[in-house]
Amino acid sequence: MKKTENVVYSDRYDKRTFESIKSRAARIQELENKGLEKLPSYSPLLMDLYSILYKTDPILKSKEKVKASELINRNIIEKVMDTKQYPELRSYTYLDEFASSMAVLSLGEAVLELIPEDAKQKMQNIKSQEDNQLQGLQDQAERAQEAADWASDEAQEAADAAREAKKSNSSQASKFQQRAQQAKDRAQQMSDQAEQAQMTFEEAQQKLAEQAEAIEQELEDGAGEKMRQAIRKAAKQSRDQAEEQTETLEAWGTEPGEIQKLSYEDKMALAERLKNNKKLREIAKIVGRFRRMAIAKQKEKINSRTGVVTNVKRGNDLRRLVPAERSKFAHPSMRLDFIRRFASKQLFVFETEEKQSLGQGPVIVGIDNSGSITSEQEIWEKGLALGLYQCADYQNRHFIFIQYGGPSDPLKVIEIKKGEASYLKLLEVAEYFLGGGTDFEKPLKKAQEYIEKGLKADIVFITDGECAVSSEFLIEFNEARKKIPFNVFSVLLNIGGRTSSASLEKFSDELFNVSELTVEQAGAVFARV
Image (cartoon, rainbow, N blue to C red; front, side, top):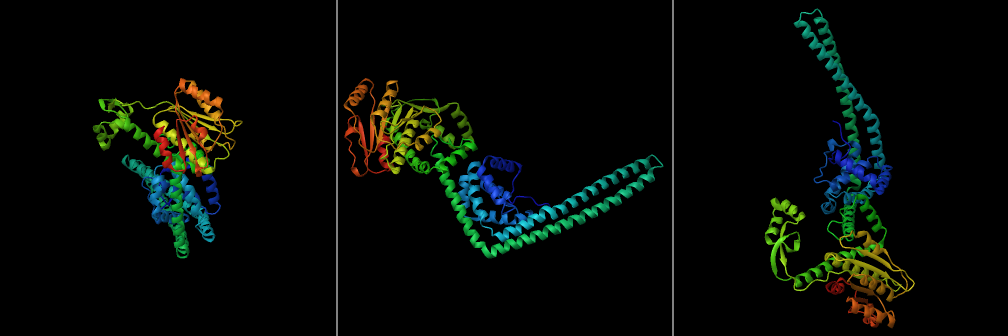
């Protein structure tokens, strides 16, 4: 029986997919090269790890169908699949090429260290015998079988010719019969040789399998429990990393599945960017909580302002679905029709009369980049700014970030228009920091310019401290507000109660004193804007 390379059942598509992933993932290539220096069967081991993480129903082959050099691979894969963390890990990697390949990196690195050096050397010897002696025997058996098949075909042709000659009373009949017998004898001889060669091959294969099983048993007796503990630890770390990575990546998407729609290369680039930037990872940890708070506050506002139902119309606003449509979505046989009608805006939805109109104008947020901002404050204020963006995006509103420092520092302005892809710009907002002085007038004037150009915006101004503003600026700024009304909501990071709010009160409609950097304190801002 010819044994296959991998210990988990996979098809050509699976293998092509993993090869394609490797060609685009330098880190997997580096790991593979490192592993091959220590373990000759490391390449198929990586493929097997990918299979048990990605495939719908991964199935482990029996030992009899696995090459001797890969019995240790099978032992490792079996131990991974037996951990309680494995199903939890698969909840992140199942049918997700990117998540699966990232988990292969962490698991592949860990399992490489589990096998002692002497066992690796023994497996290297077995692999060498498979590639040389065993392969030679297999080639010999295959050649003998091919010769037997050819002689059998020749004997059949000669026998057919003898029958035809006999029917026609040809004098050549006996000659053809003699040739047929000779070919039959030759076919039998070749078949015997093929059978003997196959037996020799199978005996050698069995001998190598026994050697590999002895090594496997030696490992189990000497370090079995230690290996299981290490694999459980590695599986838990991979699960935790997959969870963190999923949450971190999704933190930068504004629409459901936005990050999932990225190409493999873009996801890899984003993952590397986040891995190498501690600040981005810290901001990502709180963005999810800020997002949930922001969306919840917006829903509360909409619910409180929604009037009576006046009509039923066609559309795809899921918040206003009539009950019958909701039941269709819940029914498996009607779900596809629901999705089709959602795409074509043919669902039945309620039409309501609003009690008061929602502010749907742009939002401009000023983010303090002065040197007095601590790393903890920076993470919180950017979490707040990104949460405010979620509010605006939920309402389909234009959004502008203005990061400011001192009078001589440049303003960092990032604008995101309605429906525009956002995650790269959000990352840019999160990464940027000046660390300069403090100047309130410069960012407020920039916000005023946008408003005077026709953007009827609300301004949210975030700062950690006091900064004098001139009377000339205040007069001009407040006069502008009489011509084009707009709100200014200031957020003072008043940690420890040492900061004065006097300057902010001169140009703010509402002031939020933040004494603790919590999501709950941000909720008041989300509810107001």
